[in-house]
Length: 410
Image 1 (cartoon, rainbow, N blue to C red):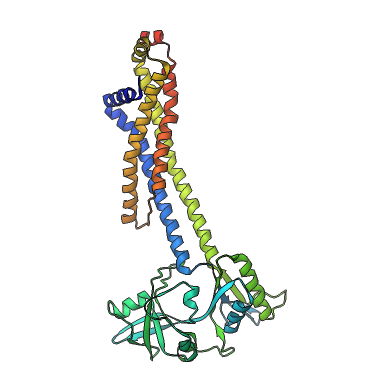
Image 2 (image 1 turned 180 degrees about the horizontal axis):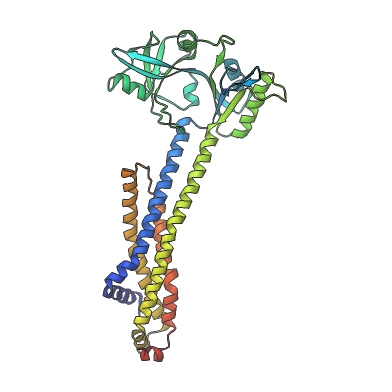
C-alpha cells in the first residue's frame, strides 16, 4: 500500500465519524490558536519596548542633579542644581567613549498663539541635544551656534504642542509667546511618542539654552552655569557600564567629593533600564506560550484516546487487512496518517483562530499584538509533532495485533 492509498483510507475513516473527528481536533484548534495569540501579545509588548528604546536615543546616559543635605535633612533628587555646563564640557573632552553631550534646563509654562494657549514643558537645550537624542526636525530648521551665542528668541515645537496650537496649519515662521516673551517658531520636531513612564515626549517646546536661562526660566542664584540635566551619548562600540563608571569618577573629582561622601548627582542608563524591560517582556512571552502549549498537549492526549478507541473498533478490519497481505508497517502508517491529519487540519483552523484572536485582543482590549511567521510555523509544526507523538502508540498497537486474534474479536 503506497502513501497515497494510506491517505485516502485515513481521510475516509475520519469522514465516517465526522463529529468525533471534529471534537478531537478541538483541542488542537484551541491550543494552536492560544499559542499564536499569546505570542502575538508578547511580541507586541517587546516591539513597544523597542520603540521606547529607539525614541530615547541609542547608548544614552542621563546625568541629573542629586540630593543635598541641609541641617541634617536630606532633600529629594534634583532639590539643588549640582551639575553645570562646565561638567558637560569636561565629560565630552576627557572621556573618549563619549560621542556628544547636551546640557539642558527644564520648566513648564503657558504658551500662547493668537487666542489659543497650551500649558507645556519648556526645555532649554543646545544644538547637540538633537544628535544625542536622535530627534530630527521634520519641518523648518534646528538651532544653530548663532542662536545659542546670541540667545535668540527662536523655538522648536513638538508634535503635540503643534497640534494644540496650530491644528493643521504650518507653524514655521509664526510668533508664539512664552511667559509674555515672543518667540519665532523655526521648526517642528519629529514624533517621539511616549517614554517608558508614559509621558508624552512630543508635548514640549525647545528653545536655546542661553535664551531659556536669560529670558524664560531664569538662572540659579548660586551658580549661573547650573543645568537640570546632561544627556550623554556614548559611542556605539563602547561599553555603556564602563562609560558610566568613568562619568561618575570624573564628576566626583570635579565636585571635590571625598570617598566617604555620597554622589551629589544621579546617573541613569536609560537604554539599560529599557533593555531589562525588554528581557522581562521576552520572559513573559515565553511564559504565555508555555501556558498556551498546555492546551496543545491536552489536544494530543485527546487524539491518542480517540485513536485507541478507533483501534479497538476496527480490530476485525485490521485483522482482515493483515490476512490479505497488509504488513505491520502499512497498518502503522495508516493510523499515523490519521492522527497527523487530525492534527494538521486542527492546526490550520487553529492558525485562523489565533489570527482572529490576536486581532480581537488588539481591537477590544487595545493591546498591541504582533503576529510573526515564525510563531505560526512553530505552532503548526508543534501541532504536527503532537499528532505523530501521541498517534504513534495507538498505531503501533494496531500494527502489533495478531491477525488471527483480530479476526476473532467481537
